[in-house]
Amino acid sequence: MSDKNKKQFGVWMDSHSATVVGNTTSEEFAVIGKVTNPGAANNSNENASNNHDIALTQKFFKEIASLMPNVDDIHITGTGQVQEQFVKYLGETPQYKNAVATESTSNKMSDENLESYIKQYYN
Image 1: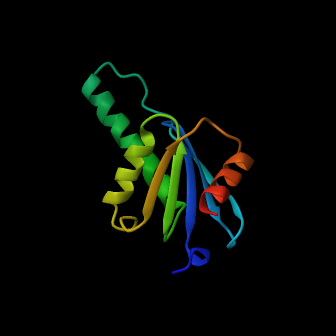
Image 2: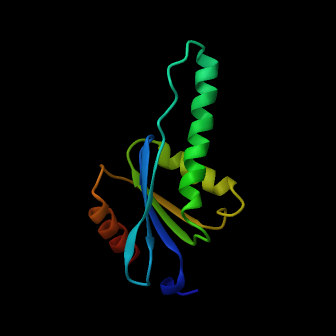
């Protein structure tokens, strides 16, 4: 399959928000959607709080993945370690396990800069 026909996506994410960019045409990338993860509320029981946080993170990952049907290539960037967790999540999800996932670290960027960054990454 040529690169021109591949469904390519880019995601900037941290533990609380994600912006998904995808190729709308063979040359143009645009923001497809944004997802937020409010995080767990304070809880006096540490175990319950951890379980709630894990459940919210899984929901966050599922919402991001739902914006990217039939993904061939995905580049994930952002701050912290959440990108690694998301790559692992994609690898464990049957629909996305054959997608080629790469990751990098970057600071928060505007939607336009993210579109440009992902376009340059794939070209």
